[in-house]
Length: 403
Ligand code: HEM
Ligand SMILES: *[C@@H]1O[C@H](CO)[C@@H](O)[C@H](O)[C@H]1NC(C)=O
Ligand SMILES: *[C@@H]1O[C@H](CO)[C@@H](O)[C@H](O)[C@H]1NC(C)=O
Image (cartoon, rainbow, N blue to C red; front, side, top):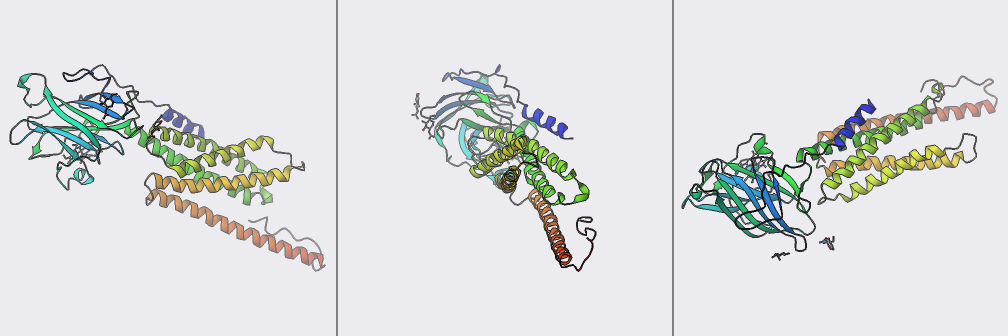
């Protein structure tokens, strides 16, 4: 089971999106020559751009195609995430009054996607220096099904942020100056991509990030949030059950080692997720993650230097092992909760489920703790009685045989 899971993980990790085919794109337009270009994954669209890192200025042209004589073609960037909502878009369509091509700015707020409000032009809150649209490719340059269009824009970007989410689409109809919904086939909904302007490579696909996030969440939730605490519970309470003998140790070591390997896999997915979204930094989650991972590694390493039971340093090793272990578990569990916040799942059923698991575990601990106290007190009392000579022969051990 575990090897299978790990195999699945590594295949996930080693999955790289196919390099964009750049055969069809061009850097040359009648107005300008650009440095880089890229074919976009849907709607036969492409872009070409020149990026000046020293002043964070991006000159870009988007190549798109109309699908109807009264339709629209839009391109934009989303400052926060690779999706339609909150994209700052430039949309080109024939002016309802003059029939000439117009290019207007739009902010795609959430109500648009929910189709509560129609899309109305509004000034962009990003630093757009220039924008223009040109039809090209003969046929009297009229808008028709299949007409090619270029949307030019010059933008000043946030310094040092070179991974940009591009969003584009096209629709059949514009009502007044409000473009109406685009087709919603799978192809038309995959018109989002994240591109690193400097290297000209497509960053990982949206869906890939989602899969990684899910894997990261589930694996780390299980490893750090459940297995590790269970391992501690095993060592704390099962070791006193004499009938089990050394079995508790194998159970404890087995659970902790699998938690560690699983946790390492989850941790590396986390690192990769961090690389994929450089704009987003979750400080506390990251730091706790690193700390918990270091402690867990220390703990695993310390196994190699474990003194024999007879060694006089054994008790120091033991307190060290307990201290690092408890700290690690606490950090792990706290970080699982941090993770829920980071993923925006602060009030989700997943979190509720995890809370239920954790409280069950805590309930079990409390019960076992009370039980061992009862056993301890009973023993102490018996010992006392025995010492006072009230009880002659040792009684059969009460607690340990049935807890
Ligand atoms: C004009 C009004 C618009 C409406 C009513 C609208 C509506 C929608 C709806 C309902 C979806 C989700 C469909 C689904 O998941 O089944 C969607 C997705 C999408 N839309 Fe729009 N849209 C509009 C304009 C635009 C514009 C102008 C662009 C791009 C410039 C765009 C780009 C996208 C993209 C890339 C997706 C897929 C990714 C995502 O769901 O975030 N849309 N749209
Ligand atoms: C940025 O620098 C380039 C040359 O490197 C220049 O052509 C462009 O005008 C500059 N843009 C701004 C907004 O200063
Ligand atoms: C951007 O990076 C350069 C060097 O890589 C650095 O000198 C500059 O301070 C950074 N700017 C910002 C706003 O972080």
